Image (cartoon, rainbow, N blue to C red; front, side):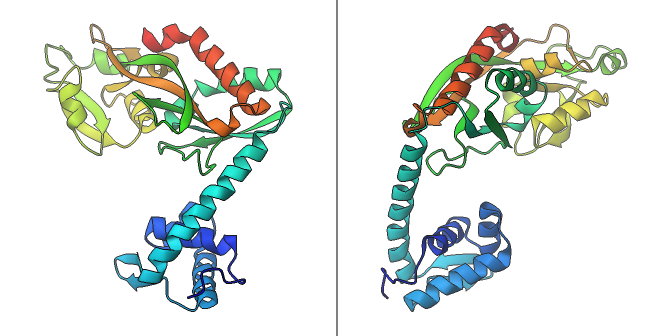
Length: 296
């Protein structure tokens, strides 16, 4: 196998790494946002140029061959160097203009984000903003986003972070639901209905009402809020989101619970980039100015 084949290009290596990380061609297609055929051709072209098979294919997915194990180390180093060059070039920007990509949990894009972005756009009309609404942690080192607004207790050392406020969780429902469920909340919540999380029920024992019945298990805060708005039960969500929704009210006497911090994160190479710095400072000022909404 000739690792430094002249016919090997970075696009093929990106496809190779995506397939290795995803464990399948379909997963690589989703990760890179290209069609399945493009991924298949890229892997096959790379294998042909190197004269060796890089993956074993099976019904369970892709696994690296021995040559593939060797290549992945070279490819990861090339990826790291390419990303470092791109970040440093981006970091040379001294004017507050151009595009920034912001990763944020979907729940916080509803109502909370709109006034922040409206004010920012008025202050910086030459900066374009792309919102990446995801509950996944965007990899800032791989430039999946320039800035990430995340909820966490602590963050990794390879990013620059501003810890802003520690938000609280509150219990919300519609007034109609509360009016039609006699003695809804008594002690531990027996007789009440939760709209909760689908992945596990560990949250239930930590909730204010561990004996409430979980009748509706949903994977995101946004869907939970919509179900609650249809009078289907109560939700335990960031209080700032519940208070901003006119359809919901706080469940009387329900305690609030301290939760994670809200962080603004960026890669260290971008901290002097004018457009990135402008958004981080503006967003931090906005959130801190409205901190009572997060902690009340």
